[in-house]
Image 1: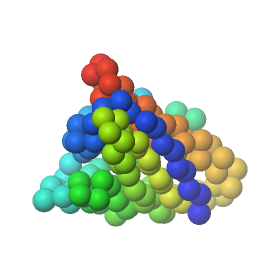
Image 2: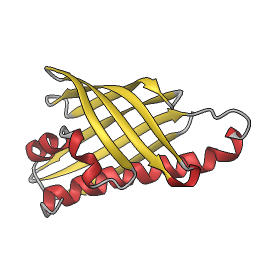
Image 3: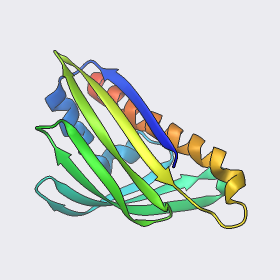
Length: 149
C-alpha cells in the first residue's frame, strides 16, 4: 500500500499549532482541493469527520468519513477511514516540540481501487495525496506563522 510522509518545521509553539490543527473544518480555506470538512461527532479527543474533495483531473468529487483521535499528551492525531471512496485511508499527525518551534509530520497510508482503469490512475492518485499532504502542512505553517489564512 502506498504511503506518503512529509514534514515541516513551523515557527510557533506546540500548543498553538496543535490547537489550530484540530480545527479541521477550516482546512478548505487553505487546501484548494478540499471543498468541505464537517465534524459529525465530537466527544473528548475523538471526532468523526466527513470530507469532500474535488479531483479536477478525474472530473469528479471524492468523499469519505474518518475517525480522528487527538492526543495532546502524545502530540499526535491518529485517523482512519470509516467509509468513502478510498479502500483504505489512515495515518498520523505527529507534533514534536523544539523549543519555541514545532516539527509537524504527516504520514498517510492509502489505497484506492478504480475498476478497469485503476492501474493507470495510481500515479495520479499518489500525486494528489502528496499535494494534499503538502497543502495541509504548508497551510498550517502559514496560519500559525503569518495568520493570513
